[in-house]
Image (cartoon, rainbow, N blue to C red; front, side, top):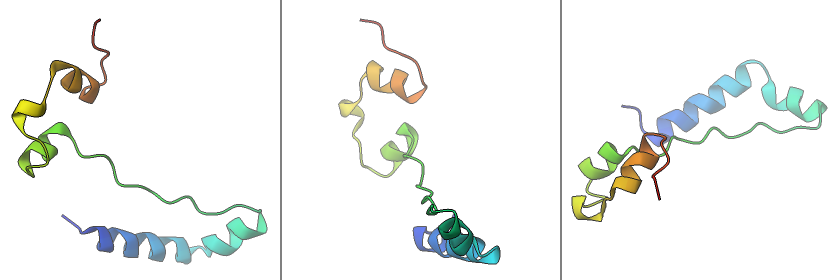
Length: 70
């Protein structure tokens, strides 16, 4: 798995291949930064960021893109 620094370095190199910064500047725009995805519930549990006691069914349904019922 690449590190965040590896990904940032790769993004910089890809943007420079086509002289993207100059092209975007000529159009009055800037390059949008690509943000990393939010960690999944499984990733948060495996890294210890969340305790299983902190979870609820609403959290789970939100993670899978469903709306909890009221």
